[in-house]
Length: 191
Ligand SMILES: Cc1cc2nc3c(=O)[nH]c(=O)nc-3n(C[C@H](O)[C@H](O)[C@H](O)COP(=O)(O)O)c2cc1C
View 1 (cartoon, rainbow, N blue to C red):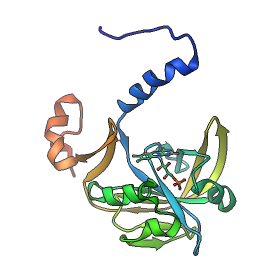
View 2: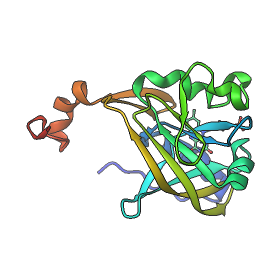
View 3: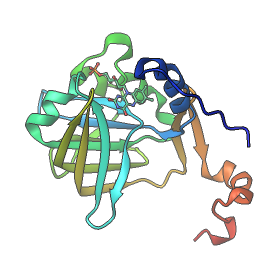
View 4: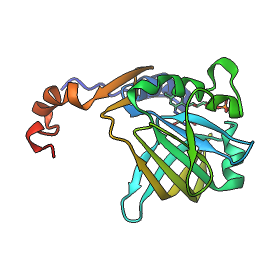
């Protein structure tokens, strides 16, 4: 066992190691969309995850300084768009890099409204229309619990993930054989 345990004198001293630790965590990349009509925006996240199946609900952590935050709080609805491997460009636009703001971030991709009226990305691996069930404000972030009211699922198999500060592809067809010995899905089990 080669784990390293260190005693840290204070919380600030812990931060570099904590950042390094979190870089080890592979995260699926999604775009949270907020707003309706002209006032739309959104942000790239890796913190989206499933909360429960029954009822269908998700959880996501959003920085309260992000431009999406006040709109989410006011409108109480959001879209969660799970990006496919080919959608790095969308992730970049919604990460705030390049200074794109609001509706500018939506250019170059196709968006469609479903139940709540927030734009959902056509061609995403999956897109969830959500109503805010609860917001827990903690530290710099808000933990948002969303009740899923509509689901779009696409047939693509390659997902976009973020790991060690960069985008990576997870391709079911290419990677499944390599993943199988680690306990991944058995290709024989595929429908
Ligand atoms: C791959 C990736 C994952 C991110 N994950 C999160 C996240 O989970 N929560 C968050 O608050 N910000 C996250 N960010 C940062 C936001 O995308 C960024 O701060 C936001 O788009 C800036 O928004 P603004 O310019 O509208 O204020 C992530 C950025 C990237 C590139």
